[in-house]
Length: 178
Image (cartoon, rainbow, N blue to C red):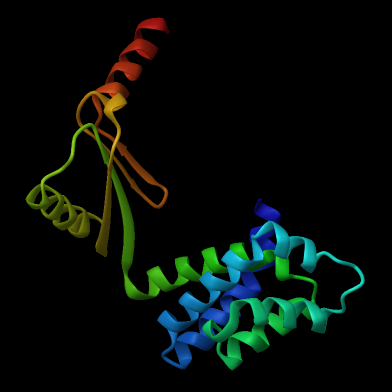
């Protein structure tokens, strides 16, 4: 996986810098998301890996499937990727682009998993506290997992805060077994 990131990084950086310089970060994020989703489709993977297709034909095929969702600049970007045989990197390029965009905009997506549904006021208070701690605008997504027994599990990028009863019981069991 690290190899894919290494290969995708210069393309993601170039797309990000172009989009930032032209005040088109949101548009490019949407276009790359669509292109990445199309590129991961099994039928599209087969077409893009067809050795009888030229790079131009591969780029045209992908662009046509994406339709009007892609602008001229994004189509050119896809043509460059096809010319360098890097269309398979589109999902990784999109992920890196989204990360660069979040850093630029000082935002972070936070996933909060709780044993029970969180009230809106609790979710908002948690978002405010996390926003202060992380020094970013926080976008909170919540879900429930009855297996946690109680408490919450918070994921914000690489940061994981396990405040669940299940997590505490697992730590206790590990301490008792060692």
